[in-house]
Every structure is written in C-alpha cells, then in structure tokens.
Length: 199
Length: 254
Image: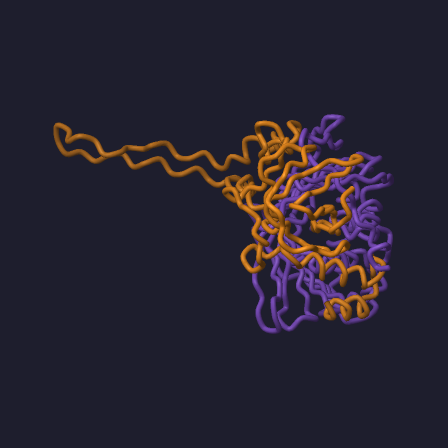
C-alpha cells in the first residue's frame, strides 16, 4: 500500500480523491481473492460454482445473464472462434492404385481480433472465498448445524462458514450460518460479510 | 484486491494523455518529447470523444507483486458497452471474480453474477462522472476506466516527461503505431490503430515505483456503433438474486 501512497503523492494528476481510498480498498479487497492461497472457511464448493437458493431450477450463472446481452452484440459469429477447417482428406481404404491425395485446404486466416473461442469460458469460480449457499430457499430459516464459536457482532469476514442460508429481511439479503447472522456487502467490488445481530 | 491498485495506476496514467502539447513539449528536447507522439495521443483522444456508442473488449493481464521481488500474473477479460452520454454496461471476469456494472442514467448497479448478489444506488450524470463518483464514494473501480477518462475528462495533466514513437506493429492483424509515454512513476504504452479510426488496440501500463515493475497489459477489440436496445443498460434482478448494500467509504473510514 505504501508504494501507492508514494505514487499518489508524486503524481500531479490525481483523478481520485484521497490516497486512503486505495489503502482501505486494497487491504480489504486483498482478502479472499487469491484462488488457492486463502482458507475458504469450510465453504462447500459444488463443482466450483456458487449457486444461490431460490434461484429457480437453473440456479446457475445463466440466471444472471440478461437475454439482451447473451448475443454479444455485433460479435455473435466472431465469438465462437474461427471456423474450423473441414475434415479434409482423411485416411481412406486402399484404393485401386497409388495416387497422391490432394492436399488439405489451408486453414482460414484467424479473424482480425484473434481471441474469440475462449472469451466465454470464464464462467466458473467466482469469488471462491465466498463459500456456497447450499440448498435451502430464501425466507426459510431452518434449523442447521450449530457453529461452535460465538462471533462478535461487527466482525468482518471474506468467506462464509458452511451451512449458510440466505434470508431476505426488509429487502436486504442476510446469510444465516447456524446462530450467526452475516450481512453481505460490497466494499468496492469485493464482497465481505459483517456479523450482525439477527434482523 | 489484486487488481485494484492497477486500476488506480491506469487512472493516473490515463490523465497523461490529456496533456496539452505546448506545455509538454516545452519541457524537454525533441528526442525525449516527440511532438508527433503527443499529437497521436491527442488525435486518439478526440476520436474516442466523438464516438456515440461503442463496444470494447479487453483481454488483459495484470502483474501483481506478492513480495519485494516476486510478481505473479493474473488474467482478466473486460467488456464495456457504452452509449453517449450516460449509458454503460461493464463486465469483468477473472479467475477470481466475475462482476458486472449497469448504469442506465438513473441507477448504478453492481452485480456479482455467480455469487448472486447485487447492489444498486441512485446516480446520474455522464459515464465518466459516474465512474469517478463510484470510485470515490464506494471504491468501485473497474479495469480500463481510462477509456472514458481520456475522452471525457477535462482535467489537464502535467509532468509528461517523455513521449516517443517506437515503431509500427501489427496487433491482431491490424497495423498500429506504438508509442511510449512517461509521467512520473508510470510508463504508458499505447498501440494506436492507423487510419481513420485511431482506436487504442493495446495498452501496457508499467508502475516504476515498485521494484518488480508490475504492468497491466490489455489488448483491445472494438465494435463501433453497435445497436443497443433501449432496456439494454437497465438491470433486472432475476429471481433468487440477493440484494445487498454498497459500503460507503466515508462511513468505513470512521
């Protein structure tokens, strides 16, 4: 963080107000972002996807992809990658006599923008530190296995413990994990959970 | 987060390209400050400013120093859909996170599509203003905000100490010109497309204040004048999405 303190001081065109902005966001945002370094706090990972209860039968990321954006305006064709060359002359059963096979057609040139095929592959592993909300529908606070320790109200964590249920109260979503209630929040674009008194 | 510091890096570097040519050139000799390089940046800026809508995709890698002499590289994909003056959809995916931002001129909504949370706040104004306010109030920083800062900010920058033309290069089959700029601790390289549409096709920003010299590198792909339906930029919460709140940085620091 201090390096960016210096960077801010030394630079004359400051578009953001306050170097403390960077410090607090960096410090908090760093937690839980590393995919394999941090502990996950026991969150269950169902095949690398974090699904929400009550998200209908789909319960997958497709739920959050508004139809108007799925076409990738203007790039429908391109985003599927360059067309593959045709099968070409494969091995044939021995013919009546030796004759040279025609050469396979040359592969088509790559499209000008180059990296289409894997643009849409990033559909997994979001916020691996966030844990998984397993199974129960929103609104039902069912009995769950108790969390052994009591946690002080106001504690901030970046990963939920296991056995959490999403509950809607007053239009805001809370996570109930045993006796402990967490309130998810965005700090910048990172998600953190604050322990709160049951709403 | 890993990426946050590099967003700030690029916000600072983006201001570099707003330098007025006269002030910049007066500081150093021509071998260090090439007027053609300054003019190329200004031309690109004016061009971006004139676009009424665009769709840009970036395939980026970020180098993140994890200790004094080690840095790791993280990849991400960024997409911006923009319609002047106050419509924006931004999407960003990396191995660690997936986020989306919707701005429809009245509300700003931040979504974590896979985790399933969204938060919304009332905001209005131009896209550049809204992005700046979102970062100041809530710390929301998306990659490549400079694309908007270049074109729409009127803040003059100073301290450009180097502007240099490196040479012609081909990026994704397109002829571009490669330029290097320096402002303070930041080195900024842009590959500007030749011809009538001087889009930036690749950007590399290097932080020289860190011993490991971490860089943010992004290859850009542009779709000019896409057709967006009227409700494209409005976020509609799907069933099961959890509404949460944005933490205001002002209250966080109390």
